[in-house]
Amino acid sequence: MSTTAGSGRVAVVAECARDAAVLVAAETAGGSGIGVICLRDDGKEGRAALDRALADASGRGCRVAGPPRFVTGEREAAVAGVVKELLALRPRRIRVPDPDPTHRDWDMEAGRPVYDEPDERAAAALVALRAAREYQVESSAPVLVDCRRTEPPTVHGAAVSCPRYPAVTGWLTEGFDGRSSAFLPSAAGVLRWTQQRRHGTAWDGPELLPGPRLMPGLRVVRDFSGLPHLFALRRTARKGGGDDIEIVHAAQYRTGHPLTPWHSLGSPNAGDAYKSRETGFPAAGFDAAGGLVVFARNFGHSVSFREQRPEGGWSPWRHLSGVRVADELVTVTTHKGEVELLARVRDSAAVVRWHRPAPDGEWAEDRAVPIAPRAGSMAAGPEPGTVVYRDLGTGEPWLWYLGSTAPVPLGGAAGEGPVTGVRGVEAEGWSYSLLVRPDAGGACAVGAFAEGRPDAGVWWNSLAGAEPYGVPAAVLDRTGMVTVATLTGEAQLTVMNRESRTGGFEFGPWYTA
Image (cartoon, rainbow, N blue to C red; front, side, top):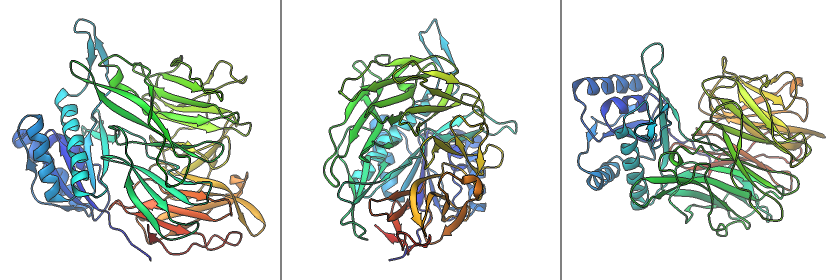
């Protein structure tokens, strides 16, 4: 069955109207219905800023679901009030502020970090996240959450927001039995869709997987056997008040069966009430020997890591000295099966690379990486030792081979967010790498180039019929069949199969999983 999904209903939950205005400005999808919930009335100026933001959103084609709603009271009452308003709005997407902002300085006398934003903003985010979880459980429908970090005002005087957690890539995987699984984060935890039979159009889900109190982000990494491993951040209450943030890991060894228990990997700044909260989102990679390396930005804005060797033992958290980085880490596995790390430099368009000149040796830092990506656009490429990103200036996709002197343009329309894909796709006697990305017109685009030869040109085709929310995903199964999937703004999984295993790049109709 073919489906064309709408952009969905979105609720903005913020501490005050002025904060809500910044979150409203991030909604660019025409056709979205926007409802606003505030925990405080910040007066005439704040309401005027929100009115302007809503008017601008209306000009972009968004629908405004009535005037802003104000919820008052202490935390328990505020949570209940927000849940009530969410049940009235019935959104499938919720935007909230950053619950764990980054510091800009340290107050030696007070013994705590100094932030560029008020404490009330993060407190409102925690109220919104708890309400979103309760709303999802009560409504029995998937709810997607976008935590937005507020950036300082630009030269034009307007504050902007960017995602707190990275876009989820590689979330469509294949098990040993040939059936696919899709994993995506939601307000209440990880959602899983499971294909009922190989190459079939019937899926089970979305199933809310049991697990801890996760933040609404997810990293999906496949080991060398193709099995999916999930990495996330878990929030736990501290004795005496406050919260800790720790990295957790689970795996799926059999399609449709329960995950392994979530295993805590701690954090680079464990045990500190302030520093732990700023733990960056983890990146991870498996090497050819079966070792696993997990990286995260630490409180000092550099990188920490710990690793598990094939025999099973975990190292303690260790520190990679060098340049300070943003919360944007990407692992790439080379042709030799070695894991390397790329990170965007903090307050810069530059990228730094860490690699090991000798197996299990010390990490070496390379600051001569010849790429300048847009924030949030880097991802491991479809071929070993490659990274795909969007150019800072144009937004067009490029590919870089680790260690090469220059990147290669991939063509295609400008845009935001990562471009991902798979390699080894057979077509008319040749082997191709296949790319997927959101199209500028609100569809999903597929590109292909001869494996190892992106410089020879990329063929792009728009797969109309589904409007992706987030990053599309593709999987190549053991029989050579390609499946492309995307999530819509209504939190529906839509899937499309390639019509031939070895012919052209024609795809069948979209169907709702």
